[in-house]
Image (cartoon, rainbow, N blue to C red; front, side, top):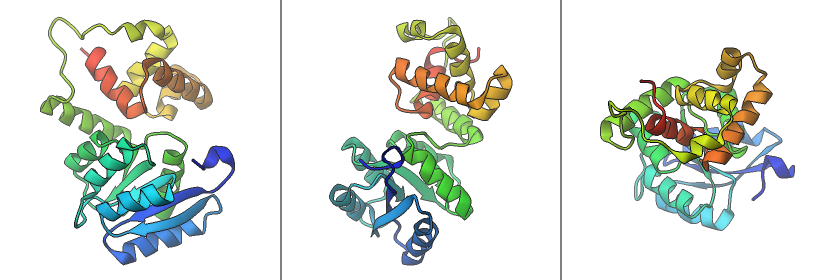
Length: 228
């Protein structure tokens, strides 16, 4: 797969049932030298087919579309490990965020975000990082706990997980702060570390715990550590 680490432009597939929206995204992304729009799709089924054929690095995915919605399309694309998915929607609704993330999306962004934020989001997801604002992370976890997807803590404490023993004391501190929804910059300020150092600690935590991204780290934290 091409992308930032290879020096080649990040390849994008734009998925939205409105042509004007796709054109707008294409215009924003095409002017960036490190981004390349390789295809478009107007529904989820076509998105899956196009992703299989074109092998983009990142799929910008709408949620509400005919034939197949963006959540199901995301689930299929991620299940086949075809590309990373950045979900774009006009709906600031926790249900969509929850469904998109449980389907395997790497990020969630509102369509009314400005052009710079969209481009930064694509680059973040392409680099292998999850994109979810801390306040959204907290709301999603609360929803997951309420739905039973993440069990709330029992009065006797969280279940022990042997993987926690693999973490250094500093990495355990970082896990706690990631679990509470803090960004790398906020963690750096909290622990008086440089952001690059925090990024290394987060990467080590994900690797040792065998987690895909920091969203999974938040879920792991609430399952095993919690705030009680």
